[in-house]
Length: 323
Image 1 (spheres, rainbow, N blue to C red):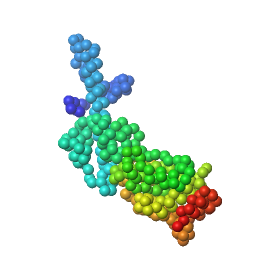
Image 2 (cartoon, rainbow, N blue to C red):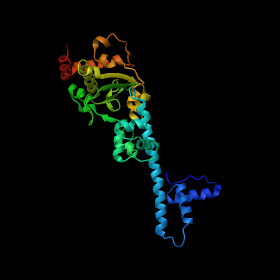
Image 3 (cartoon, rainbow, N blue to C red):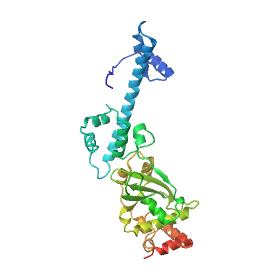
Image 4 (spheres, rainbow, N blue to C red):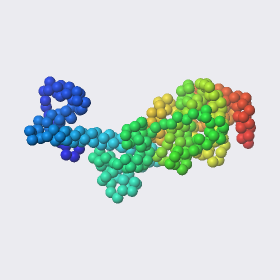
């Protein structure tokens, strides 16, 4: 911090122990305790109590400002590194960010990333939008940089409602450029959905859909409705080219749910697996092995088809969309 000088001081162990005890007693750091005692040692009879308190307040304020600058610097550089690992994103530097944000000079933005200057809250919100992370995390370290959302599919009662959700953009975005349907490649087969809005921004949704024999109340109906929605998407000239399916291992799914890594970076590590094209197509899954995509895959296909056949509304929807 400008104005402060770092001094390496050798002191006896017992003195350090006493200072640590006093620091803990007063609820401050060892550094602040030592500063307090040094400042106090130079007080004179002419110094008022208010003068001493003011000096200590200044020291504490500088200390806390230094901590915040360091924390913001760390968060800024964390999301910058994450963004640079997203496909189709050029290698960014603070100077390039300054230029793209419309600044005439780069020095102010460079100082943000070096921890020498704190951005305003408005500037932090602007940076969060540019870097594709959560503004509250960048400003206050609240939550995580890429928070997920929970989506309860039991509230969606029609195929149209499911499809509409999949391609409905979040507030602030014009469209969903791509939807990724991810099955966690474990026995429960939970489904995650990622909506990508542009090259930098995406939203991960944790759903209560399981493509496996793990189904609870309304689970079988949700499975069937979801599969019919995939069928509708695959048959739609508007949506088909914007939807893809994947199988992720449990570790990557957990990383997505934790929200500490950019979801589009994690997506780049995987390969498209076309289970969404086959899971509803009897002509395909009857020819495939029982565990073609995952263990118990074909059992899920037959069970979903049986449920559709037994449910008049779902059967009508299925028949209506036949070629």
